[in-house]
Amino acid sequence: METETPQIAAAHQSNKNAMRRRHRAEKRNNLSVSHYLGDLHAHTQEGEKTSPETVAETRSGSNCGEITLRALIFFHAVQMKNKFLAATDHSRDASPEVALNGITEWFKRWLTSDDNSLGENDEPREDLTPEDKKLIAETAATFAKVVACYNDDRLRINLEKIRQQKLELAENGIPLFVLIAGVEANLLPNGEFDSQIVDQGEFTLVIASIHPDLDPNGYAEIMADHNLYTDLVIKGIEQPQTNIIAHIGFGASPEFAEQLDWDKIAQAAIRNDVAIEINVRPLMEYIYREMMDYNKFPANNVSYRKAFEEKLPGLIPLLSSGRIREKLKPYLNQGLRIAINADEHRLPIDTDLSGNVTDLKGHRFWRCLKMTEAQFNVWFENMGIKQEHIINTYHVDQLKAFLAKEMQSFPKLS
Ligand SMILES: [Zn+2]
Ligand SMILES: [Zn+2]
Image 1 (cartoon, rainbow, N blue to C red):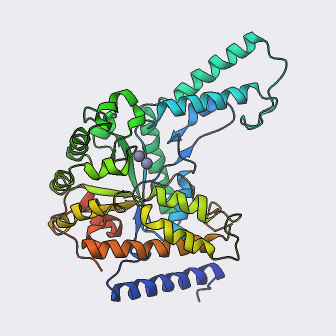
Image 2: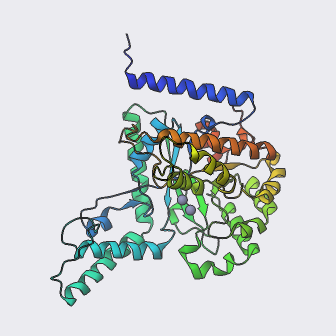
Image 3: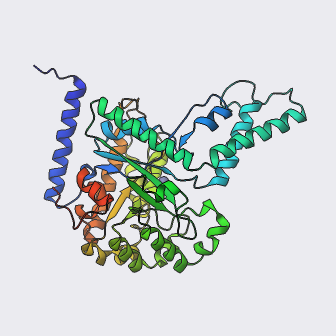
């Protein structure tokens, strides 16, 4: 007889609850969080931190990521009950200057500190000569440059890491969870990607992104002219490897995003089997930073709900704009697809490596997601967005067909 541990019993119960929520939602013709099968935009970071030199030698993933791929997978597979996840680290650092300065300072603090505290102990040693300091500054800058200004070598390591994790998943009894080898590739001002192995089709999922901080001068003209920006978005959509065009308007004002030529963008997306991303990172960061702040909103107090309700309608890029919603509306029954991605850099709740929650603040997080779900449903109903428009709700086979650009029509979903 099979013995059921409390964990397995809890997992069954939680699955049942998820199914009930989903059936209820379906009856009302709404989408629920449990339709959402996985995030297609997430950043990781790993490597040894024993010295600036080892950081330079072993750093993988994105410099802005704060989680290991393993922790991210377990969180999504075990906690979120997702079916898939795409690891999409940056093709190159999206803010190289910020990264270079930040890492140089970190290494400098590290090399001048009294102990080996990863540079977190700010007490500098007092016995350093000006020459020592000069040498330390040079060493810090040299290693920081390796970390900040990486190339395709790191992408090859990222791919290998994903391959290893897939093997581990298969061995650890969660073979049904699918890890997708993705990349967030920078779209240069000339419309090309900044990585050869992205062009060569090494990744299953390619997110095309415009990150103006990559080269502030190079993008200056584009960021000041909505026609030039629209043209660059279209070049990104037309890159043969692109599957998702990410956070359109990132780094510009909401008004700038409203002025883009959404007809052209939607038509190009449909023509090229590319999904338009609704990047919910600002929303998620707000939940982590504000809603989970238990000093501001104590644990025994539900005042956070009112605060969240008021803020929520303005927190979602693109969808928060009535003008953009109206612009996209006619294209939904012509085959436009969207991707709703958290662009995750860290986890909302503390978990151990097996994905078990070690911090029970999780309930409030879920409550915020349910409130978000309600807001999305209002917009979706108004725009005619159904499950088949949202690629995160596709079954794995359908998602793979979409990513391979082999999907002829909307999938049948249930
Ligand atoms: Zn990005
Ligand atoms: Zn990203």
